[in-house]
Length: 290
Image (cartoon, rainbow, N blue to C red):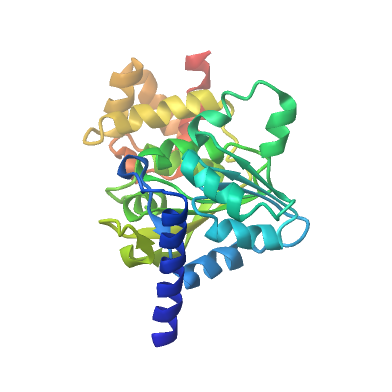
């Protein structure tokens, strides 16, 4: 235990030294909390199962503690970092790695604002890793799980987001994020991470997740599927049939027949349904949306 505490103290000292050297101050509004636990860093690397053929996209490269280890093990590493001061640290401290490219940009905008195919190809990677700030975690994850070029992700999120992603049918935290993320991917927890593993120390714990793309559940029309999921959870306390009828404007008698054909009970609530049940409803209602 003393050795672990020593390693943590050394990484904390190095991180603070880099802050001082480059005149950097963490910004709370950007959710900047920096991992200083070497054991968790090693667990992330281990979970990625890297070899010299892998390409990796790191979201929020920070001071480069993880980035350097990625560059040592992977064929190519692309780091995304929104903070220009942190980009200075990355470019100054890791310039010896020819297989590392840093983009100083906002990850929430970078995929939608790519004007050239060549630049887009530079970002595509087999594996994705990162510590996602709470305020962008949900929408960013829903964007990333749809990318066909990603094999899997090892992502750090706040414990609350992890619990939502992992919640099974019947759980109160199950919602739109849960169903849509699990439509595209298998989500598994690697380890819970305490606040003390970061500086500044956040108020809540985090969880490290592995998110691996699955074969599709085969919704005939994914746009319709998304609409049904969102409509079902728009009135969580209502029975499923009532929520869908009200939100989508579907005649109740017609909806009863469609739900029966899908094998889903009218009286269930959205949180009780499995992903494949939402898919069945979507496929049965396909003609309604056409």
